Length: 218
Image (cartoon, rainbow, N blue to C red):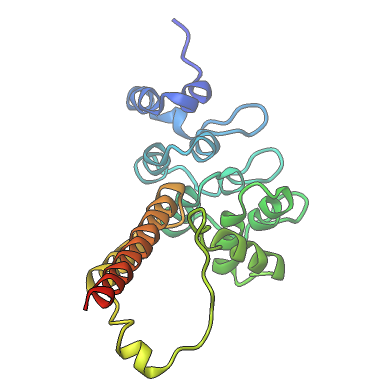
């Protein structure tokens, strides 16, 4: 019976790849005719457990290169994978391909995964102005809910300490807790932030309305 094509299995069945490697560990560091390896596949498809197993259990070189001189870091598509490769598995973020470009420069030129290019620029000390602009774009604050505007201005100390009241400690805690989450900048995290802002604004509006009602009845 012929061997299964592990590169194809790595796309959507990493557990099958791990099972195959238990039977024949020599396949862990194999490469096809273009130098494509299981490391490249695991990084590209975002299979972090397979990635860790290949390096930590089967001792595959994390800087294994394909025919273009590119390591698996060049094909990472999520920040989690990039961080795992660099911070856990020893991938070299300064490695250059046959064109003399680093993974950061290659990813940056493609424009597909700006958060990875930003991260690699930070770890290599090559945080360019383009990366800085991309960082602003990636970390841009979420839009306010519909029909809500914020007007910036100055307020008196009396307004701050009087009618405005103090910031709700529970609201402060929820913001800090949300900002500390690793998925804060993901779609889910940003949706939760919008919901939190909406709740806060509704709460302020309710308090103001209640205060106005009391004034009219006194």
